[in-house]
View 1: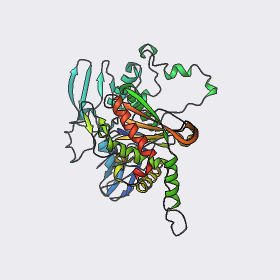
View 2: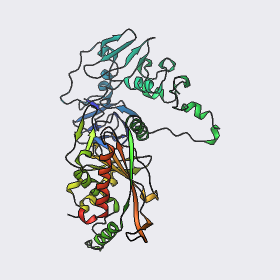
View 3: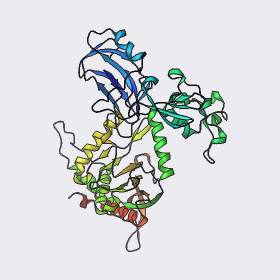
View 4: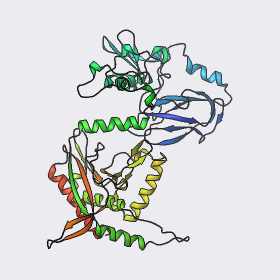
Length: 442
């Protein structure tokens, strides 16, 4: 039985095997953990589904594999390791196409698993050939006899890399994604204004004066998605100053009245962010036209307010989602957010806990940031950036001067879906809820 890299989410294309819990030749039982995967968002353990012997490990710890790739093989109990591994390593004849499993994972097959003899050619043009085992695209053959995997071909196209200059390290000299990591794109092909290549930038510095750090999967994904968001989403920004004296008073009163556990510790402690989550959720219900996402050729109007909250991680961030936040109390939101944030930092979130969502909140107030604009996370159409609370002199109704607690919030909007007036209506609803917090308690 082939062990496949599982599908961990709709947008997750590959995963890194951080460790194998079993060695080749070890017996395995259903439920035994075989290996641990790390993606740009989560880490998880993959269990065996059948009993047998781990006869082959095709993707060792530290290597990355595409979703659906064969990462190992489980042979029948008692089968020698070498005998079980031999047929998968070098097929000697053209085998018939294997019948697809009942619920096959999506994504590309392993480069090692798809022998050229097992693919039927589909001619596209004289200089390009794609071979496919029923559903998954295999390596393309370019002019000059060069073969390249789909991922490597896409990365090369995006970076403007001439594949004729690349030496492949895959089977039979095939070019794979890792072969492109240190190949700078030619300066002549870089679009105007895109800047210098990595190699050109390195040439500006003394090699003894810096340490080169490779990009991990999370940072690559963040870079790709945010660059795409800024290039394809027409952002505009709306900013409001919000008076939060009453909010602070309600929060302090609620925390002071918190029941204590047996050790005398409070059972919950509300944060300002908990109120902001609920305010945004209720505001989307008051302005339902803004509770929508962009879906390419259509708009999806959402029934519930699913609020993502940015959580900083080592080397990146993730936005776990409080689902149907408009239906939950402040204490429920607080408890759920603490759990989501803790599991996010441990990379234990499930894809369903961070994918989708109505909108998101990015709060940098704890760092003393007064005001900033956040980048929308597609397919969402808005994101709320929240700054630090501060004491500020304000004019009173009678013309005098008083001090008030204020914070600045900036709503980033996708102009394809949210027009200026609609965005202003949503921000006004958020402001009204935060300035009259008692309305969030019912």
